[in-house]
Length: 121
Length: 106
Image (cartoon, rainbow over all chains, first blue to last red; front, side, top):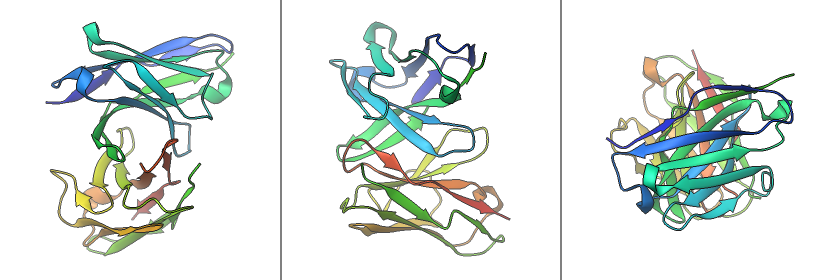
């Protein structure tokens, strides 16, 4: 079974940084891009960026460029989302997802279970 | 960025009803449009990809249509487990963008 398992919930203070992990299993990790999406409380879905684990090429949404860093460790079949200089507005559920299909006919499947990040002083 | 606009934002329906959700892109996206279902406490799940292709394992009561800028998700006969929020997403060009969601309620 193809599965993405994310790290657990985080509680952080403004200004801190954090890294969320997303471990893939059941498929060849380097054969599929991993993408990250967030959902703020009561809001819709926002795409943050993606990574090609085979060469660590990344592509970010301009809205999040400079605020997030996406990386991968192929030896661990794991992708990471790093958030720097956290603000209260970073409070959200963060999802990783595998990119299926062939660009531009691509879609997100499956998704990780989500990681709740709470930022509060 | 390509803006995706869904309508309605929410709707009330009954089991057995036919439900139609529309999604409009701010520019042409060919058929690069996906539909997701999200239930509380669960991650989104893809229903339809490439505008009209049914994801494996998804019931056939779900269907998608459209191309260019206008797209539709149809649930032919609503089941109790279909009460959820539905999102469209364009994969035509990055930054990939989602519609604001349509909540289907009883």
